[in-house]
Image 1 (cartoon, one colour):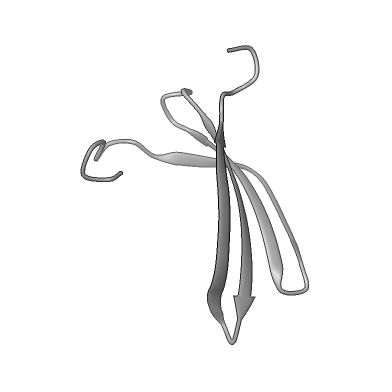
Image 2 (cartoon, rainbow, N blue to C red; image 1 turned 135 degrees about the vertical axis):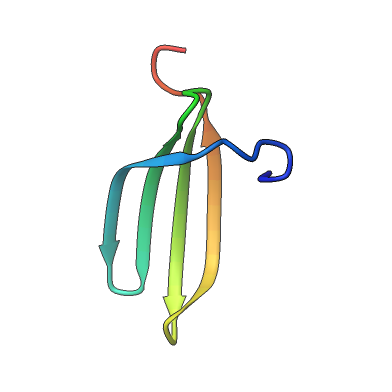
Length: 59
């Protein structure tokens, strides 16, 4: 993705963490989409990552 759009960035909108999991909702800086990611950490490293891309509200 970075090769296709090197200037594209994300801004974290919400971040919630509990135990070994974190949920991050972020928005692309060009406002074309929001990302939802769920991360599970084990031994100080990302062990699993799930994600989805959605359209922002109002689009």
